[in-house]
Amino acid sequence: MPQSLFSIWPDFGFSANPYNQETLTADAVGDELLVGRDSESARLQRLIGTDGSFPTVEGSIGVGKSSLLEVSAYRMRKACLNSPSGELYVPAVSRLQPGTDAESFEFDALRVIAQTLIRYADDFEQVGMFRPKVDELDRWLNASMFRHHEGGGQVLGVGANWGSGEDANTSEGYSRSGFPTAIRQLLEESFDGQRGGIVIILDNLELLETVGAARRSLDLLRDTVFNLPHVRWVLSGSRGIVSRARSERLSGVFQAPLVLRPLDDRQAVAAIQKRIESFGGPSAAAPVTPRGFAYLYQALNSNLRESLATAQQFAQWLHEEFVVSGRGVPSPEDCDAYLESWLLERAESAFADAGRVQARNWQFFEELCRADGRAGSSDWERFGFGVQQQMVGAVTQLSEVNLVSRETDPDDGTKTVNSVTPLGWLVYFFRSRFRFPAAREARS
Image (cartoon, rainbow, N blue to C red; front, top):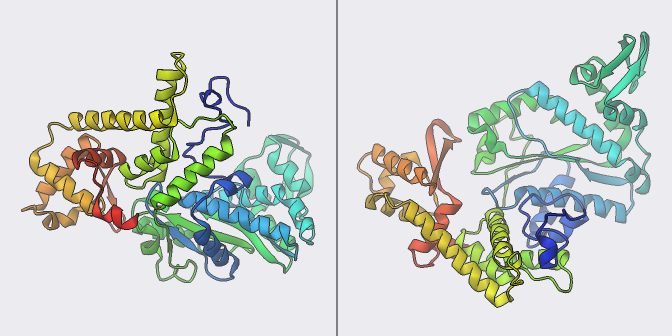
């Protein structure tokens, strides 16, 4: 993709943003940039490629679950194309997110399946299978309007009667035409007894907030989309909600989760080094060097997404202060020094903004950080509070200055889970004189 006229990255010698925190895509670029996850990716591919219940993945926010899933599905496709043996797995054209409207979700899933078969139709012939009959489907789905005439007609082999004129391609039109039946039939015909399927990621299960809501949503889909032939679902979520959402009915549909841990410091440095090499030319000057990124990653408690976002913010500051002013890009050593100073100023500013936090609440904050940054509202005695309301007050004050976030407990909608925010980890890093929590040091 060409650079914007307003992008800062050409001034640093980069063809693209090396600190982009968006999910890696299911393509060659994502494949190259996924570093430190080879063993998890290989295991996930085996789980997807083995018939039976569907795999699930669980991990903290920002750890890289979606990127792992996207790239693993791409690697399965690449392996099938490189060893044509009548087997084909392809990544869905987009991820899906859970919702409470089962009918809308079913339609979204069928649309994604249809678009995926259209995109990868040529792959089937390449591996020695018959090409799916998707040309009419392509015209029907992807034309903003389609013309029809009075009388009976066939759409994807399913009879439909239409009036004269032009209708938009709406979900109602698809439903009338027997779209669900047609897609199920197309899946059967496309794979026709061969191994393989479409890998669809059902992402961000935690958006449903409670385990009860997640269970109800998944239960509604059990007999509609989770039994579609040659579709391999992968369920992903954070905070333990995946494992707890597997009801007795769903335990036979979804496996126990593969728990994704944060990259260790060495792997995080290797990941950013790969990005710098991939997007940088011979004269590229990284605003955040691998050494600088390691410092960021440690300060932000191994949150990869937040570390990448913070690296981009520093790069924009450095560009404004040095490149725009005509002083040029500093040396790598100077960039590291400027990064530490810039991060220190941010931490000092956040700490100053939190100046009215009471001493007892600072004590709770530090104990929460040492406890890996997460505790439920029912844990008040564990932190030395005499009554639960005292902990509620501490969390309220800390959340007002964005050091702690309060969310609904996925197990009990009447309770909350309190977590240290990325800014909170930065303030803790500052207050502890640049020491790391014991829990983080154990992971490194």
